[in-house]
Length: 478
Image (cartoon, rainbow, N blue to C red; front, top):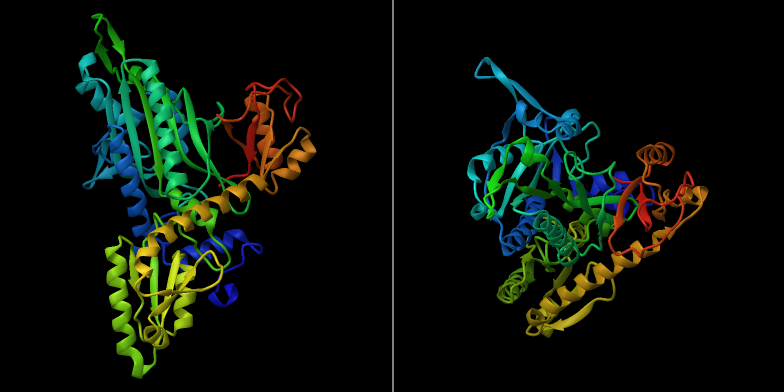
């Protein structure tokens, strides 16, 4: 069936499978500028559902949305040395506008710490102004050399949260809180099991004191960084003179955080759940949760469509996103394949005999037998069936992840393991050793998981004592 749909099997070429699926399921297409993507309505609807849930969770933690400029003076980026060095290779810079050369080049927003820091230096003056809890939904530009839709594109959509606090403790608590929000989004909405933990010094965000991350395993055994939350300390506060008078009347620098999650999460959903028939979408985010496919001939068309539309109405009243595919130009078999490719969780088939018998056929995208369910009962059953689908999808992904992780203490075993999944190994913490591992295996440190047990050992490559007191997860990554 995958071949008939023109979808390359995952086992044959996972990268080709991914490109086939995102294009044939009409999530995205390539833009005219290299590295850009056009999000088509079905793909954008998936993003809107994800955005809506995340925006609600962000606001529930006390943050307010704002918007900051797309263009950032180059001098701003240069104020924080690590920051500009980290982003320099990815910057898009405007030097001319309005037919004239600009007095100062402008960077097209790669992230907003600097411009927000500049504004906060004007707005914050007293402990009464703190904490500042802001978020913005925006596009950013990072010039990618090896672009791939959703995963790495020159322009992408995201949210970036930025907060300022009176104390280090408050800022560090905020860093962990927002990582927890991302983990909840991944698990409870995207049905993706994720690890939460710290990035190593080598892998942290440019300009941060440290970076926390959620990491997920894709169905080819590779890792995907799905969201990050950074403790910035006072680095940007010092660069932009963001100070406040504390209650003890002393002038102090604020402590800041930043955190972001992007359209890359859609790539995670595709690669964590999809199969050789196409997408499998988590019900809580799927643009269409249930599709009704009426099956009729010319002489039974009206009676079947009438029953299908009545059923659609009742399903919608039950709070389910439903669509009736009443296109005459395509056969039922074509529609089955198309909606499977698009990953719709549940499919309802209804034909003239079903109408006469007062039932319809229910089929899950996860497989299993078809069920005959009464038309009156079906709308009320669907919400729980969708919840069961979410649970089954999560457990399926969790079982796959657990089977793909192995504790290794030998470098040869390490090399073999990162060819197929994640390796949990000790590391010395030295950047040179970390770089050598990457050069020799193409694997990188993904994170030091918070929930890994304390454990002592020696570096899997060089034999020096572990720097972290627990194992580190390594994998090849997108």
